[in-house]
Image 1: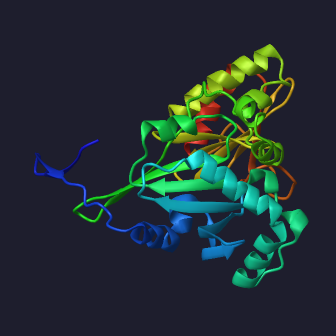
Image 2: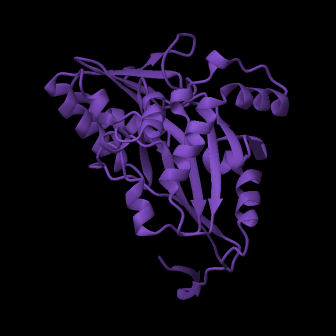
Length: 301
């Protein structure tokens, strides 16, 4: 992808200014971790069992630890290394909690962590096609993020998305005891799992709603979680969808009163327990209010 500066209608190409060292990328990420990924930095260069983790972070939305590694070497096997780090964490949970509490001066308890949501993120200036294909599984807890720097000091950061038709990695992990043990505890949720319970009419309604939400703006990421499916723009989840047998529950990530909701179809759940974030809950049973609901969702982006 080429990037140009528009100078009074004349385009001048902005050339890439490559990073010389992995440490440059690491420093940039760690200083802007919340802005880039919505994560909290726990420790830089965290050492455990003769291994070093570049960046140890925490995701407060999933209550899970995130391991981040920075790579300029295009020959590494991200799958092998990713599973090694996942296994390391699962075998040493107490050490990670101690580091969290000592670094952040808090009292996180073991049962407050959702270990099944642990994941490993590799950050590099580029990945090979083999590396991308090796991680293109719908249920693998390994992510690839590409970063590039340009002459005008702008930076692009792009998560490598898995294809919606990606297959399961389980047939591969079944052949390796260590990988199988990790895969048994780490859970990557899929849309297919959320679509098991609903009747056919609700499945079709979700597919319509999903496609229309994705069309509302560019770079929408669909993130299935344990209870809901989140729709994310950059680092913010702006809407949450929970599929039930005969209806769809929708939560809009906005404070009550921030959305222009003239028809009064949303419920104020600011003082009620509910999934996701936001004070607006909408119950959807058919497509009769689809356009209006989309107008509400668009206000949260």
